[in-house]
Length: 69
Image (cartoon, rainbow, N blue to C red; front, side, top):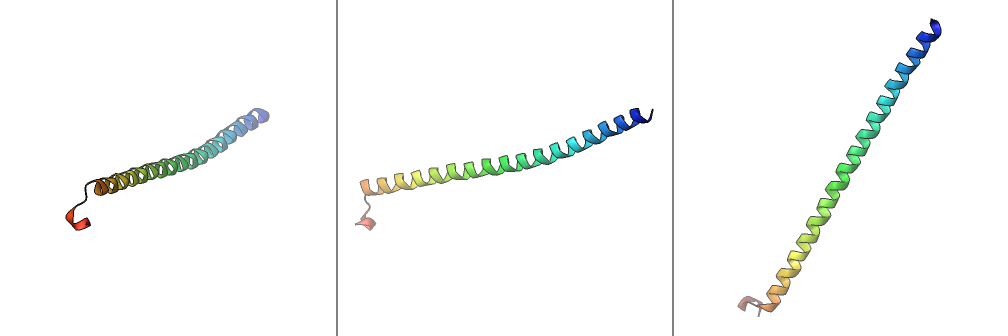
């Protein structure tokens, strides 16, 4: 009976440790993924702003205003 109890206790302990490790790894992976997605969105926004600025500059050169002359 003692061996059976010991095996059950070991299985329960293993389950708790595996759950804790999985929880920590999941949290770290989620934090990394959120950070990566945020950085990706920032890069995409910067590309859009750069393109808009280039388009505005090209349009300004194409159609100069009296203030530019």
